[in-house]
View 1 (cartoon, helix red, strand yellow):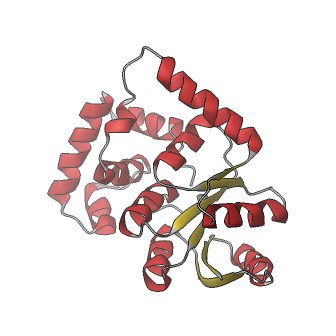
View 2 (tube, helix red, strand yellow):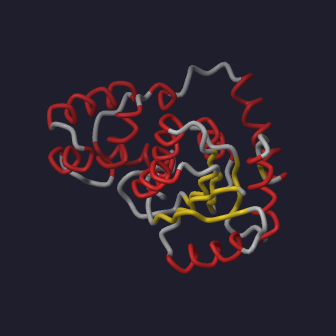
View 3 (cartoon, helix red, strand yellow):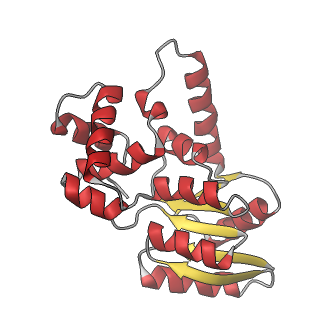
Length: 216
């Protein structure tokens, strides 16, 4: 039996997908979540084989960051991403953060079931259209002569802080959300600005938008 945790901010979507998955003879939804933080809690509690996670959930902790955290702390749980995003760079970062598969939300039910079984069997599932895009992205990154994108060298803590700052949260609010000190927030903000060669908050917001860190 494939144990599954399903994370989506819409209750009706969670209910619908749960019915479809529980109807399968080899699948069972053991928990559901409405955001990235709750998804982490459900994975820690149920230790599922697969986490199906929608990235377009409410602001707070982005789905991209949650994917990295869950994969680091619970490596045995494989992560299947559900999202509307279909561009190459976005796919590249999701897989780099530890996801084992990627399915567009408008895909048919049969594709979702195939993705789950493929991942559970040790494979990686990507829609054929997106697989072609991923190959192009790897080729582009391998052949380009440009320097490394600064985004690649941001720490996990910096990746947590950047979107919150870009959304307009103050140092104290960011500290409270991440359970860290204000001094830690200030120090990491300075590192982010330095690494990304940014001079102002508007530039930081523009960068976060470009990287789709505000679209979850």
